[in-house]
View 1 (tube, helix red, strand yellow):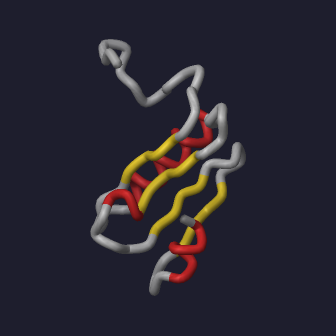
View 2: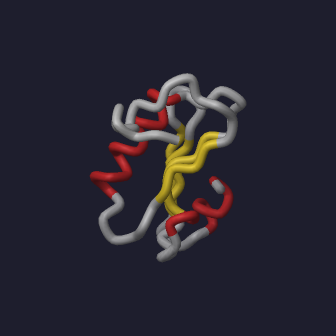
Length: 83
């Protein structure tokens, strides 16, 4: 995703402290903009930090959070959310 963001006109990416990445291609597709962490144990604090940054800065393109693995906590999930 970082290579795609770097190659896109106006694209950019940022590496979070725990290894998560905020990648922006500028394409109008949520899967091509947002926070990505592919670690076996994703860094939830780093994901939350980058997601907050995305929420503030990515106002003209849709974006998403994509993770792989099993996080031990999910700080952005409501306590009333199941699943």
